[in-house]
Length: 262
Ligand SMILES: [Zn+2]
Image (cartoon, rainbow, N blue to C red; front, side, top):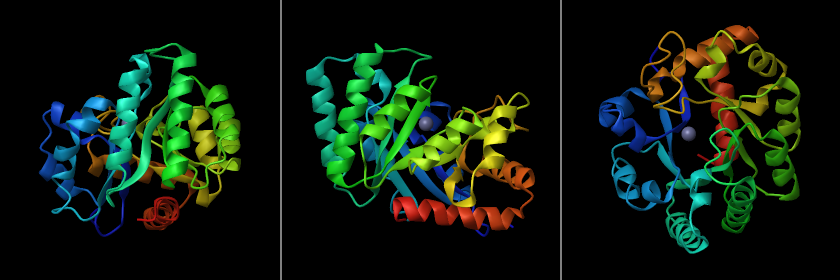
């Protein structure tokens, strides 16, 4: 069965970053089933938006998100506000289905935590006012991300993208109403805490993504990733939970639809 027939949706990848890795975008999108492209900074949002959306006609199942990443928190407030205005404008497109990826990253620490938190909170408020869900980036910032999400009662909630923590953290985010998204690192040898999380969650609470061009799953770890490779992570998760690949794919497709409405 092909990805199109299964259906193996990939709700997280970056067209512009894939292009920088010299991947052939139309070829890669042809291989994918259903796809959500993510815009993560002012450059990709403003200058790259036309390029990202230029594929829309050919791929009716391609959708986009727009958001300012933690890197943008290092910019002057005026520049951040200009970025927020761009997001507002782009969000009026029916092809934009979420605000993201947004969040906190205490690993790269591109900006002080207090500035990251401020920009994150602003975008949660924006998503709420636009009635859109959010796609959350969280690296080494479980407690602060949780606290901020808990204090912003978003109607549409969102996705904890590339979930990389443990079982208890996964269950806490799930109880807050957020979908847990597993990327290729689930298949890595040292990911036992992540696997415990993937086994403990109820069926309606998780999805699978590539984060392409990053985080290629085994057996292609280390090479540029693309949406069709999502099948390795689906298969891994299906085996882990003792499910048929098709049943898992249908459940995840339904989880994505419930959140994003696509
Ligand atoms: Zn990403």
